[in-house]
Image (cartoon, rainbow, N blue to C red; front, side, top):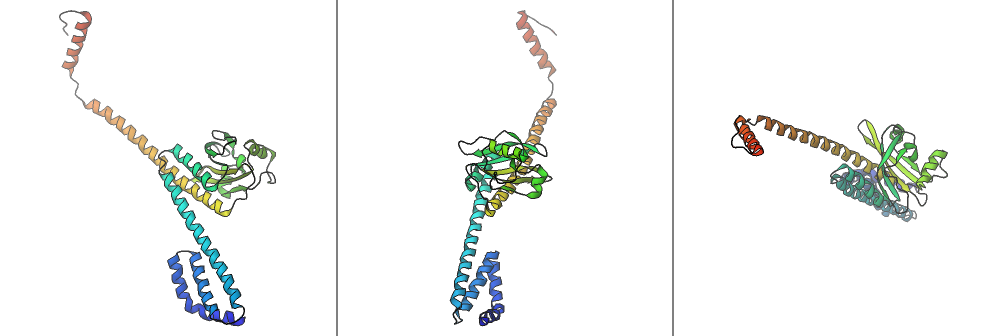
Length: 287
């Protein structure tokens, strides 16, 4: 047994450069680990003793797990890129919000996804929702932030996430439980949408038919979508400001252009005399 670790240690320095190079090529911790384990497996294959096959099997399992993890993260990146592209192409604020909840609902396969905008520190309104058939809609509802687990915007900003796997065993107040049951909520996951200097609102994912234990990967994806939404909200705000400014400038330019046009007094008098002559049905009008 000691010979195994002695051999592995002897080979560490000789393989460090290749492992570091592999880490740089892979660009991830998983790539570095995989390369190091493959190198160790090769070293063990050259050692003739009973435990070598056992160690090689364990290493093969770890390599397989890191490969799956790497594939999962690549898939997450591709998924996020596709969602971000759809959000960038939304065109207006309402489409942006609706696209967000629809994409998240499809991504996480959940009963309800909603966006909640704070109007005050502890109250707000549901501004967008994607919900399954048969469940009570929440869009347009003015609700306290307690409805999603925490009392105010600052609490959501500090905690970064509010996950409730099952509302019944969770330590919720009777009022909170009443709010949850009103919309058939069994499980809830909420993350804040943060703009510079304030909490814009919440992105909330809910399961209605049964409890759901939220996975770290689901939380990670929801946080990334929330971040992308915050970016697009800021871009949309700047766009609206520029369009409003441009509209005002165009209106002002038209007024200035009219003021710059020469006033033809003779033409105005001629038009006036003709209109009066027609009105009174006489032969001549003189000003």
